Image (cartoon, rainbow, N blue to C red; front, side):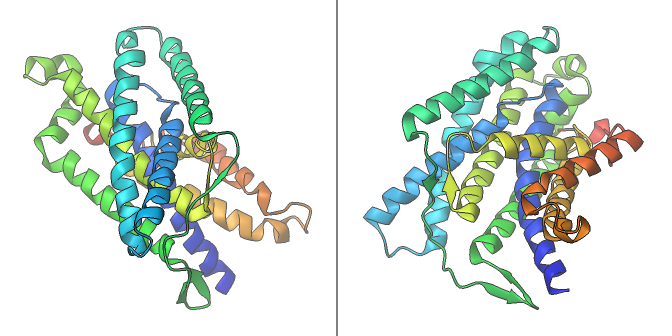
Length: 309
């Protein structure tokens, strides 16, 4: 039971990060029907900027409480990621809105490789250690442990998700996003500026990716130029699992994928008689994804147009 609780906690932490990244995918798809495969690299930029800021803070103010250091790092990473993502939309995607689907897809992959190359030139090839700023003493929950960094991660993820739901459901910008998602031409006739809505969508997705990137680095104590590919791929899978284009589906899909992956890592050795180790955990998540999409191609929550953002 202790192992089960520990793996569920680990899965919720991992799933919260997947959910934050998946929201960026699903929001852009909801408005543009475009898969921004460079989104994982935006997360990487956030992690690397957060790492740089944390090192500066460690040197300038080593006695500052760790939670403030992480908040400052996230606050610094968000505008950088927003600028990067808005530039990607303006330079790479805007002219391709009416192009065949394959053109923006290839462009997104190319932008991702370009961002990786720039990051490698700035921060180098080798993995960089992420400063340990939060207290190392874990919190006991039954027989399981959760670090204070993970508690902060869960709290930030919850606040970000609640804030996003409020923005989409209760604000004028959220109504404009839903209108543009449902019918861009009619929304334009009603006075909605589609370009502003699309830029805001990319900006919000980038901000969520920045939070996830800094917390990813803090949770795993490492960051490097290629770190965004696998989390981005899994988060995209989570968005598809929950129902691409549905913000609630992205949250549900991210958390489910994280829990499944964590449980798989904890029990894969027993299930295979020791043949496979915990580093094969990815197969569980993708097996479940294949099964769900075979039975329900639209994902668990489908694609409810009224809730698309």
